[in-house]
Image 1 (cartoon, one colour):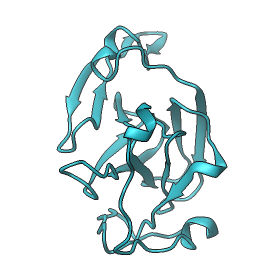
Image 2 (cartoon, helix red, strand yellow):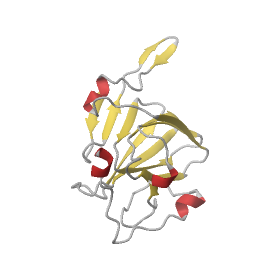
Image 3 (cartoon, one colour):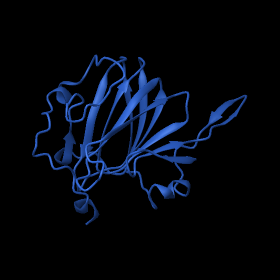
Length: 188
């Protein structure tokens, strides 16, 4: 595994190395020893698979507030997606900046998104499928969301947005009172 830094602190792209032969391939998604650079003792509490039927669909931008804040490790199992993380950490020099990467079934890249970031993606192909590893279980009382089309973020989605859930579409736009996430609550 090779860990690559992104322009946003603590947001990482992880390159895995498939072992391939005439039977197929084997890829290690996570190794605690190799991923100690991300965070020593990283523990996954929940693992999910997301399937998106139609190209152009956007899911997100989702996050959880402390004390249920979560880190995520994202891998594309089928198709291609444009995966985006937005820094919501109140004390970060990159507060409200976003970074996007293309993930595909053909490449061995994974996206590590730490606590304090919102996450979403756009399907670039029909039948896209993502594997999500989470450090905390989903918690309705602590969930948060940003609009994928909020002008305060100006996320440059690569395709015209064709579908968004009613829940994501009805998320209010940010206003001047949005102060971000205070991760000190997470660490206490």
